[in-house]
Image 1 (cartoon, rainbow, N blue to C red):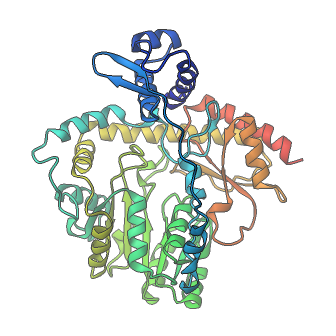
Image 2 (image 1 turned 90 degrees about the vertical axis):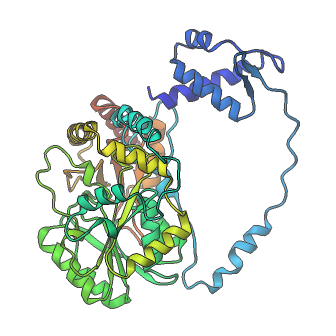
Image 3 (image 1 turned 180 degrees about the horizontal axis):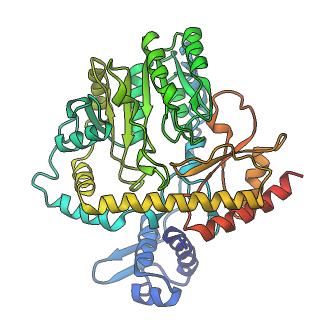
Length: 478
């Protein structure tokens, strides 16, 4: 069972027990709670901390935990209906309304209810995260001289150099900005390159977080269809001509959600088409460190082949390490770097130095390479387990492409299937999956679901999740 599920269940049980105690009554000791509920001391500590945060319990050093005094009734809520007018009053002046729909992102961030298998996650299972290595790196980082001082706004020089080496080509440390994760880097890049009301070309389907960034900024995303070899370059050229767009956002390596890799013959075409259009390419290289064991040599980032400053490169440590290690980067060459730097500084000032120091300690340790090898082997094993289970139990779901990197599979539903009905049935069966609709900025050509194999405990849980999904499909596919 996940630690967070154990904590949630213990919180529920302790809330039920609180009524037995008078205000300021002492709760059992941590040791007694560990023995009574057969959980770990960490679970007890986290559950008590949550009750404390909710104001139900107070803790006193050396004395223990006590039931808090009863709170007075909360005041009646006010009338916030005026906000509907205020938030929409200025929209008529915007060329593209700034609507924010984060549902596609929240699906991958929200923890499912206890007992539900998580096929909709966007991060590695805790057992795959390098928790010991990160803890050791954090401890070492805290002892570095000046670890709590103000870092350069662009980021620590050593970390910028490490990121630059990972890109290669002509990219150097001076071309790199350290960001608070990949999502922050994408937000900065899009704001720098596409003013409100402007079109931005995106792959179709594409990462919902990018579509949310665009819409929140008042930018109009324009879809460019893909196939198994990546974006269709003839349609990309046509889209630039039709829209006058000055930016194209893509994921050339293990694209989310399809898993496709941009074909060698199309790489130079993308750069040429963008250069002739006077446009930038935002390269979201999110999955390079999520390669599977059987992938073979990886293509270089597009930025490594870019001589003319067309590519703005984005990558992050978050996906392969921990959701909370929010350290990423932007790399660009030429005058655009100054605009990126200005927006980055205005939005963030800088990434906290302790986090940057921790990242440096982590990637410089021998445990880092071991972790990457472990992740590569585990992701391949989980991919194979999920692929085999789907082919055995759910052959009617089309799996057009099996990726050699990333953490998910993209499945097409039979014609006429309702995504909404299938998702609801899956939850009732005890498995959470991600709907395909949020990955499209226009009408999707069919129904899809995305299944993640990274956030589960292992092959046995994958098999059980597919079995539950079979039951949901029996209910909804007719």
